[in-house]
Length: 164
Image (cartoon, rainbow, N blue to C red; front, side, top):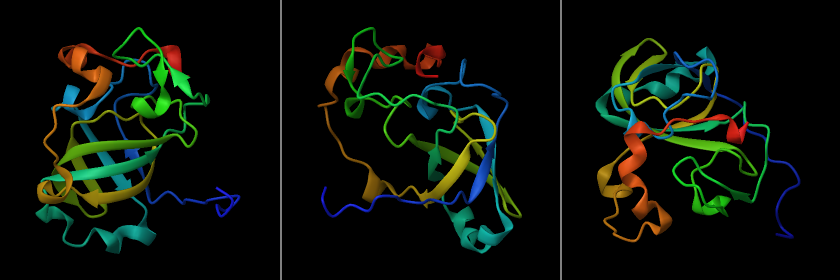
């Protein structure tokens, strides 16, 4: 780590618009709410970067989890009642509070991306958008750690106040 810069600066390229005003009650993963709608309003300065994006069915959206004020190295995640190292979870209370969502692109209207599979709060800053390409992104595995015992609970799981 002696070569790492002291500060890394990311500028939001847009903002998420969602029916969720607060983190409590938000689906904890996009796969748990595939019909939940949202949109990304891309800032005018970055609108040209959307060219050809309508050709993709899914997008990877990287966000700043701006409402999470905690930083923990061990957490009790939403799908479990036991503590785990934060890097073995998808919990928002992490050192850099970077969120990752894979959403289904429904339409592009100007610089606005309408999508389903929303697990984000209204006003969430978007740091980057990347196309989801199965050949690049899908890995077949049965080794999913502690999640293996909890995946059946995904559809009903919602965020609560433990990560605020």
